[in-house]
Image (cartoon, rainbow, N blue to C red; front, side, top):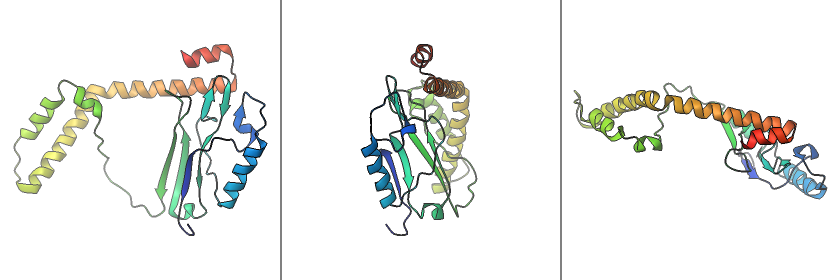
Length: 199
C-alpha cells in the first residue's frame, strides 16, 4: 500500500481512549493498547470528526466504537476530508459519513439529479412522466433522447419541490431534533433527557 491513499473505517468494537466511553468503569486497557499499536503499525491517522461524541449507545453506556482512519498519503490526494458522526435514529449505532474533495478536482457546474424511490408510490408520478415524455421536440435520434431527459429532469425537480418539499424540511428538522436530544442526553443522562430522546 506504499504511496496509495487508503482508508480504514467501520466498527472497531473497542475504544482508543477512556474519554471515548461513558457509563461504565470496565477496564479495557488491553484492547485500547492493541488498537493504538495497530494504528501506529499501519501508519494511520484519525482525521477527527464532528457531530455526536459517541457512535454507539445501549441503556446508559455510550462508546465511540466506530471511526475512520486514513493512511499517510491520504492528504496528498484529498485536499479536504470531513468525517461526521450522524445521529442514531433507528439503531443503537450512529452511521458515519465521510466526505472528501480531491486536491486537483475540477469545479463542477450544475446539480446532480437523484431519483427518489418514493416518487413511484405517488399516484400522479406515472402520468407526469408520460406527459413530459410524449411532448414533441425539434430534435431526432440521440439528441431527441437527451432533450427529453433534460426536460423530464426539470419537470421532476419542480414536481418534487411542490409535492415533497415540506417532507424533506420536516425530515431535516426531525433529524436535528434527534441530534440535539442525543447531545443533551450524553451531557446529562437524566431520566428526563432519556424520555426526551426516546419519546
